Length: 360
Image (cartoon, rainbow, N blue to C red; front, side):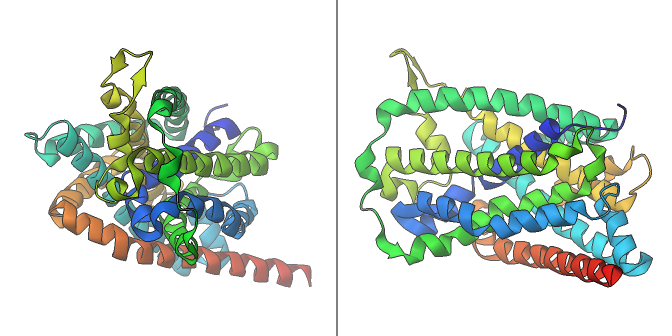
């Protein structure tokens, strides 16, 4: 059915956004905050963030035939609704800049050191803009294909890393008690879970099998965090806490240990495609989000090109080096995402009040 997607496609988008938002910067921040118990922070997050998931489902169920901008206009009126919509779009634009810099910087630093960031950014920007011009159906199909490829590469990576895994590297268990792992859940929450709120831009009724929506979203949430948990365990189990806290991209470093059947090695660059694909999709969907906020009811052909051009220029010009980027991710980005999440808390409360008034 034209203009429709299914819950499987929606679920793949959620899994990719949750995992890719964390890769490259999440493990670095998590290890720095929680130490050797970093993987426990992910398990704690699964429990602590259940209300966050319920809020996501609650907002999605309000006026399920409308996208987020139209929900807000119906909830607050046209003027205030547009203000909140544009405010959310600005936040997503800032987060998408993080993805763009993370993607281009990783490729340049690890594979193409002589290539300017702008050149790499232009290639992925054009692909992201083209996917957006094809519409949500194309974007969702891309996510389904990318997740399928990523899971295969992910399985290969796990299988090849098992011989290098040392259980002793995960000790001592609860070295500093629960305090540090509990505090570090803040990074999993802000870096990985909150980005899934961008999926509210897709109306619930845009899915042909919307009756399965809540179950699909819940499973996607659990799968995404489980994959992050596996990444954390493998990173610490192979590198140990001291090396894991030194490298900017520890998950890439552990892939250098992949050895299949005793003779297939040095395939980390192939497996790293999972990370590149994920960041590319996150950028693509962020452009879709912003485009829909600007023109929620019209076809968007030129707007994605304009958005991605501005995004590319900002990501290259505003973040001069890795040191600035790491400081920003660790200290500033979480605060911005909490501010972004606060908007949805207010939206959820507003929906509750409106429904209560309607029933009285």
